[in-house]
Amino acid sequence: MESLEKEAAVALDYLSRISKEAEKAFDEFLPSEKDRPCRLHEAMRYSMFAGGKRLRPALVRAAFDMFGGKGESVRYAMSALEMLHTFSLIHDDLPCIDDDDFRRGKPTSHKQFGEATAVMAGDALCILAFEMMGKTGNAKAIEILAHLLGTFGMIGGEMTDIECEGKQVDLEIVDYIHYHKTAALIEASLEVGARLANASEEEVKAIRDYGRSIGLAFQIVDDILDIVSTTEELGKDAGSDIEKGKATYPALVGLEKSRERARELYEESIKALDSLKQDTEILRSIAAFIITRVK
Amino acid sequence: MESLEKEAAVALDYLSRISKEAEKAFDEFLPSEKDRPCRLHEAMRYSMFAGGKRLRPALVRAAFDMFGGKGESVRYAMSALEMLHTFSLIHDDLPCIDDDDFRRGKPTSHKQFGEATAVMAGDALCILAFEMMGKTGNAKAIEILAHLLGTFGMIGGEMTDIECEGKQVDLEIVDYIHYHKTAALIEASLEVGARLANASEEEVKAIRDYGRSIGLAFQIVDDILDIVSTTEELGKDAGSDIEKGKATYPALVGLEKSRERARELYEESIKALDSLKQDTEILRSIAAFIITRVK
Image (tube, rainbow over all chains, first blue to last red):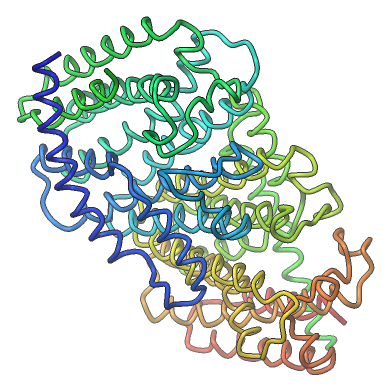
């Protein structure tokens, strides 16, 4: 585990550096609070600047650089992926969905601005993300991103997650939910970065396989953290998965087996990178970072 | 007025023909109710097939054909524009926004499927629209569409509309709301159709000017109809604008002046087409149709 933590430290450095670059881009591309409709723009910025690791922008950047991408398009894509992630969080937190009051230690959008503005702020971030993607000039990347985001991707996972609350489910459903709710957008971040750098189809496939594995690991680790952490550590209500009867790995197979499964997924993610001739250090370190978030 | 009604009849024929083509495309592109998440797919189809004139797809098709467009991309764009329109209606009807129970004579999405599914169905239609647009291969059209849809377009108009409810507003604000809430997406339909047909920048400008005028006329006519029609005729609650204290033309300047303004906008829309050498019969007839919806 010690060498994994050394690797994770590389990722932490990288994430810290890229999050600064990403936040500069968000500030440039998000509409000003001085422009009409001011309050909506304020709500968009509030959620975009509420913190977070900026993992998705970092994955876009890492894939783009690894495959030798050049130019400005990556900054649009980094912003788009974080906008899409933020849109999904704002809508998930709504009273009619997860009904969460806190996110990253701050009141959720609807608590701060009211429900109507929160719905609209989510919508607006989703739409702005596609405007940013339009600016990359890569229609194929847009098609794939939207597919991985829609009902056969993230939205499908969220919907199934809601539908399964309080119900008895099996591992197949939990895997379906995890893959769609979380891994799909992580996979999309890597694929968009790779495609903007004109990676080959084989390279895209390898990086998607890596993305799927770290995405699944990420969600399992999240579910473990929900059980073993305090609310203060999480910045949101700890233990809320159990309270809501969410379909999670720990609920189904226990903490120990969940840790094992996350570790397996880590190994699979590293293996997926084998076929690539590029320098995969950053991606390997990010996989290590994900797995070491939980002791 | 008689010749206008003759022209409007041409548009009615056209709309009836194109709506059949459009609905065939929707059925082909919308996910099946048999695929997971089934209920979400059902909700998407429910709202997409709840009727309506299919004005936006018809405008996409009319502009595309007029500028000599060829190929399948127009079917994706026609579907995308109707999905975006439907997404905006579903979210607008939500309890936290307009709180409407009926739309086109049927229960609104949240009444039929519950609020969580309605939020998600709107999100999913918006995202699927961009997947369709990705399939057109035209990233520039996507960028422009998203811009006209976002906070400097449709969403901006809706947000301001909500914020102004029950407040004293002036004509400048009403024009801002009308242009953004309604005209922007109508303009976008025409511009997307024109761009997919590789129209020149001058041609795009002319058709956008036309679109802005018919879009503004459309909203004024809608507001007049809300006052002079019965609930049965409208398929939604008549008189709801007054009840909610909405900022409308009739509320500000009265019915007669509103009719005059709509007529002026009609004239402006026809004038905008002057510079085009293409056959503009369909577009002229659609303008006439919009203005003759109200006697």
